Length: 202
Image (cartoon, rainbow, N blue to C red):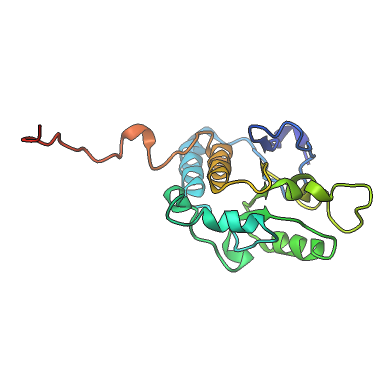
C-alpha cells in the first residue's frame, strides 16, 4: 500500500499527546480522482459526511456521554448522525466509548471488520485513546489505546468527554471527509429561511 496517499488521523484540540499511528490496511486512501468525476466525488462525499451512521456500541462510562449527545439538549441529529444502528453492517462510524480490555479486543475487531467501507473510527475518552487511569505498570488486561487494534480517525480527549465534545468530533470527521467543517445545514446561510422583520412591534 502506498503510504503517501494515506491521510493522517486528526488530533482534536488539547490532544497533543495522543499517539500517532500508522494507518492499518482498512484505512481509506485518498486516490487521485479524474477531473470529470470530481463533481460526482464531491457530491458523494457531501452525502457521506451528512449521513454518518454510528454503531450502537458502548464499552464503559463514556457511552453515557455518547448517549447524551443524542438527547434534545445537544441533539446530534442536527448533523445527520442520529441514526445509531444495531448492526455493524448498517453503519459507517464506530465510536469507541470506554475501556477496551483484552477479552473484548477480538469482538471489537470482528465488529470493525463487519462494517462496510468507507468506515471511520472515533476514540472517545482517555481510556480509548491511551488506557487512561489503567495505563500503569501493573496493568495486565486493558488495551492501552484502541489504535493498537484498528485505525483511528478522530481522538476525543476527556474523562469522560462532554456531549459537546462528541459533536465536535463529528464535525472534525465531516471535515476529514469533505474538507469543509459542517457542510450542511448551514452552507453559509444559503438554505436558511428568510424571515421578515415583524411590523407593529415596538
